[in-house]
Image 1 (cartoon, rainbow, N blue to C red):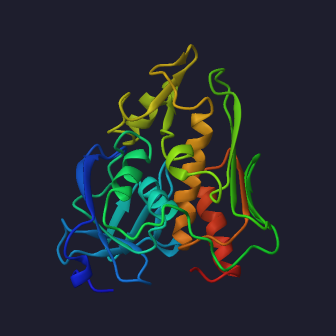
Image 2: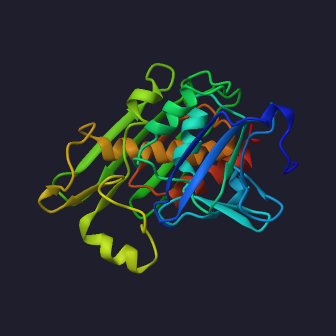
Image 3: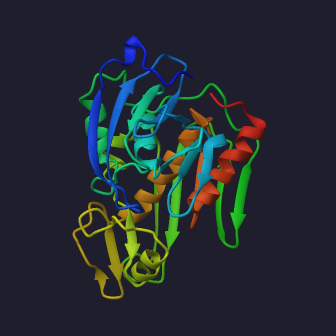
Length: 282
C-alpha cells in the first residue's frame, strides 16, 4: 500500500481534532476516501515517510483500556470509536491521516464521528454492511466470568452486558440489530465511562491523561458525577460500541450474534483472532 495519496484521496472528506484519552496529546484526524477494496488504514503524517497502519487484527499492538494498532514502526491508539463509526455507517475503505499517536476522544462517544461521516463526501450507506460469510459453530473466549462469543444466527446482532458494584451502574444489558436500529441514534451517542476510585491509579500508570468530565462519564459511590445520562443503560451501549469497533478489524464481521458480558478490548480482539482462523476477513 503506497503512503502517497491517489487522485481519489486528494481532498479530505472531513477533519476533526481533539485530545487523546490516554496520551492527553492534541491531534487532528483527516479522513479521505480510498480506493475500493483497500480497506481502512491509518497514516501517521507527523512521522518520516508517513507510515501506514492497516486497521486489521494483525496490526493490534495493545488492548490496555483501548485498542492500539501498530505497523511500520508506527502506532495509532484508541481507534475503536472512529472505526466503529466508519464500519457502522457503511464506509469500508478510508485513509485516516493522523498527526499524532492517538485518535481524539471528542465528547467520549461516536456521535461526532457519525455526524462528520454523514455530512462528508464518503460513500457511506448509513448502515453496517452484511458479510457474505456467517458463523456456523459457536466461537468464544473467556476469562473468569467475563466472555465474548459469536453464535450462529440468521441476523447480525450485538448484545452486551456489564456488571459493577456501584449502584448507579449495577447490571445492565443492551442488544442492537443493525438492520432495524440506526447506529447513529442507538449506539453512537453512548459515552465512555470510568469509576471515580480508579482515576488516581490509572493516571499514575500514564493512562487517561486526557480524560475529563467533558469527555467521559464518571461514577462514584454516590452516583454519576456529571449527569444526565443519554440513555439509562449508556455504559452498556458504550461497551457495545467498543465491541463493534474492535470487530471492525475483521473488515466486515461475519453474520452472527455477538454476545459479551463483562468483556474487554483484550477479549474482543481474542474473539476476532479466533474468527480469522475459521473465516477469511473481508
